[in-house]
Length: 109
Length: 109
DNA sequence: ATAAGTACCTTGTATTGCAAAGTATCAAAA
DNA sequence: TTTTGATACTTTGCAATACAAGGTACTTAT
Figure 1 (cartoon, rainbow over the protein chains, first blue to last red):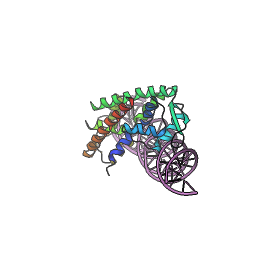
Figure 2: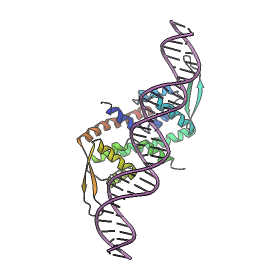
Figure 3: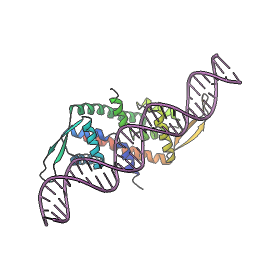
Figure 4: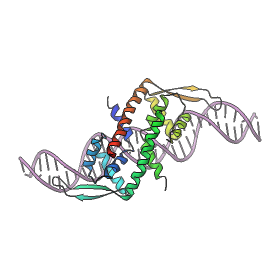
C-alpha cells in the first residue's frame, strides 16, 4: 500500500522525462543502459519499457541521432547523441522548466 | 507551427496539475472558475475540460470535499476544500516536487 | 552445446490532459 | 412571457505516454 509515494513521483515525472533525456545527451553520447544509470543517479527511476519508445520518438522527431558501436562485452550498443534541432528543443524545455518552477513557487506563496 | 512552445509546456504540466490544485485549495476553498484564475495568475493555463475531471478524481480519492453555495449572479457554485487526507497527499507531493527539482538540478550539473 | 549476461524492441493497458459539445441556472432585455 | 447572454458544471472521444511484461539477438564462459 505504500507505493503511494512512488505513484506521486511517477505522475510528476510525466512529460519531464523527455527533458531529462535531452539534458543527459546534451553533455555526452550515451546508450540506453547508461542513460538509465544517469537517471538513477539523479533519483529518477525509469525502466527500459519507458525509455526505448521515448528515444525512438525523439529520434523520429529529429531531436536525436544514433550510431552503433561495438562493445567489448556483449552485443553492440546504440549510442544516441543530440542534434541541433534537439538543442533548440532543449533550450525551449529549459525555459518551460524554469517557468514551471516559478509557477509552483507562485502558488506556494 | 509555433505551438511547439505550448506543447512543451503542456507535456511538462502533466502530473503536476494535481499538485497545483491541492496547493491552491490548501489555502482557501474555491470553485472551478476561481481555480482556473489562480492557475492563470501563476502562468499555468488550464481549461475546464481538464480541471473538472481532475477535481472529480481527487474528490473520489477522498482528497477533496465540496459544498454548494449560491451565487449572486449565475448558477450555484461548487466550492471545493481540501481534506485531511488531501493534506497528507499534499505533503507527499511537496516532497516529490522538491526531489524532482533536485533531480533536474543534478542532471544539469 | 548450453547458460548467463547484456542490450535492444514490442505489445497491451491505464492514466490523463484537452477539445468540443452538452446541460443547467439565473437575470436582464425584448 | 419569451429570449438572450453570462456563468457554471458535466460528459464524450481522442491522443499521448509511462509502464509492466514478454520477446529477440548477440557475446562470452562453462
